[in-house]
Image (cartoon, rainbow, N blue to C red; front, side, top):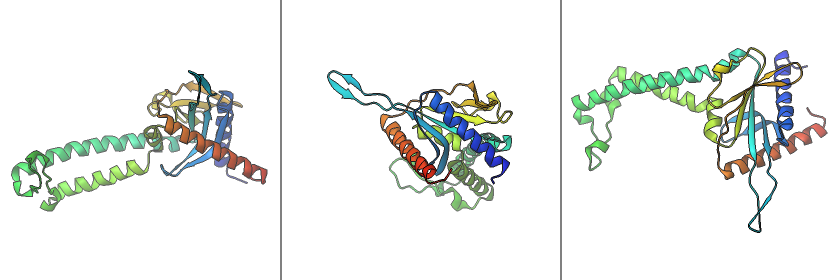
Length: 234
């Protein structure tokens, strides 16, 4: 038997799945891997558009796509939102300090200039070669935080990916406030036996190719999930 936490997340996924179907997203999948982003979507769904006749030709257009990220605890939600925001703020602080350092170093240590280009403003300076400890420590921290932002931040990754038309956070009551949502995300909260829409997601434009690829991935995952159920899995 699974833990109470795993039972809660499974319930949210099922409710999100049913909510998507109820909104006309007729093809849906649970636990959809996205290898290119190194993440797994809790629920994803699409709404294929019927073909249309335009000037005597049949035209196929990709429909809307939606993703759902489910959170059962406030700590888990804050880990992927506020933590990311605080890291970004720190990165901006370090970048400002870096610019001040480097402006001073260019003035006081012109020998750091590589001189590999015709125009001095485009030359490379090897600031680290000076061995200035405060600057090197600053750059070490900046490199580490940048790596963490690129490696983590599921909400931000999905927005940058630009394949989904809509993004929804699905939560237990009290997990997330309306004012705490990542930019562009909608909010669905679990009620007695269904989800309550608290905030509508913002529509995000994406290329037809991105949406076709995403819809294809959803369809393949949905088929695979049905196959597992027929074999006696979940």
